Image (cartoon, rainbow, N blue to C red; front, side, top):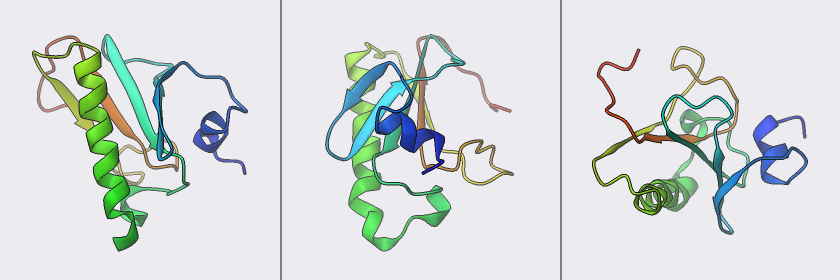
Length: 112
């Protein structure tokens, strides 16, 4: 498979693991936009949130639960941001569903 994140998930491309279980893999972003910037991605290839189906409901909930767990583990008690970009106009640059967890500094709004 030519998907960048599928290769990261299967270990073909090295990454700095932050969390992993049977459903997802989380790793440090190579170009962090905050002191904590983690990407949380399902092990299963789903191109985008827009491509998720009814059968993905539990997985989507698990990804958010994972973001909250990592935020607790990273000590982000003052707050953090969870972002999902969907499609080109939404800013998605890799066609594999992923959640950005950002924190460790005050985050402004709107983001961009």
